[in-house]
Image (tube, rainbow, N blue to C red; front, side, top):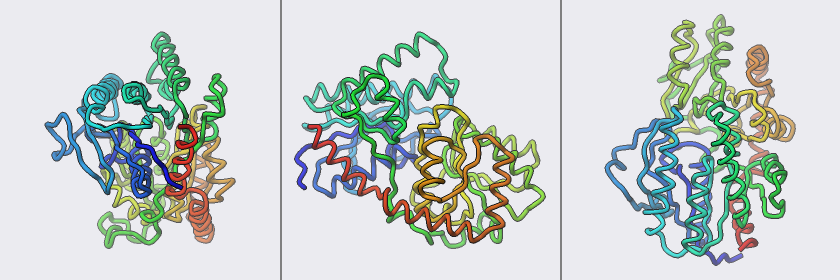
Length: 411
């Protein structure tokens, strides 16, 4: 099928930044380019989650580059670490304004503007650019704002919440199509009076060529002091959402078993506090690693025996499917998932790729770890099930093709 439209894909996050939004936009755009569909990504200068812009991108207001065939326009952004509400709002606002005032002038004619959350100020920028360009507006909703920041306790001003909710509904109504990443989010948006016929679900997927079992870097276990150890890994953002302090309490309970080691890989607002907690608790079975590149990620999954996917016990997260579950399953690793709702259903009931643990339940987490520690056959079965499941349903290329068909249908 031939596709005859130009796409402007607006995302605050893009490689070399890590995370689900960055990976989704990059891998989807790369596939579209290969299919002959003109795509330009409009993004900011990388600074997430540390708030530090890499040397190659510093002291610039605007930059154009091509990453694996994908044309990228970067605009000015106020860098901010993934902590501190005030500075993060400035970070979001700065990208919204620079995308509209600077970035929009540096991209050619477009037929479709796709704006992807997690923060919907990107949606505002996308809508404005769609009007300026005479293009259709597609709103990709990865997180439900402002619901997510309210439930996390980051916003409690009722006036501001009502204003943000009005903006949210405005964007839903103005979008030609709304793309969500979970069935639950689709139902929530439809329940707010948005026609279900314009809401589509394209869940996150995985680059199966990158995330392939057997890709561990030579000598990595030895360098990390993990040779001969049973490794429980958490890889991702160390944020308010993840309740990682409970994992440390579990590590304390298992301290008497030095062959079990906990590995934390990544950055985030809570990392410093977690490292202080390890020191205070006197834990010797916990290792922290700074953020790694996407190319290194499969190697760290490979050395893990079990991978954790925890979130806090909040109603919001019943509609969330952490994107890392697809990477973990692609690497044929067993999952301990502490997320209720749709994520539990996908990993445990459909894929049969792991064990569910009630969020923030340290006792259940300990029991699940010990169960997998003692049962190598179960670990391997979960790993095989997960790999087969994502091969069948969550190949990123297949999902990107589905996305194109939706866009063509709604033009």
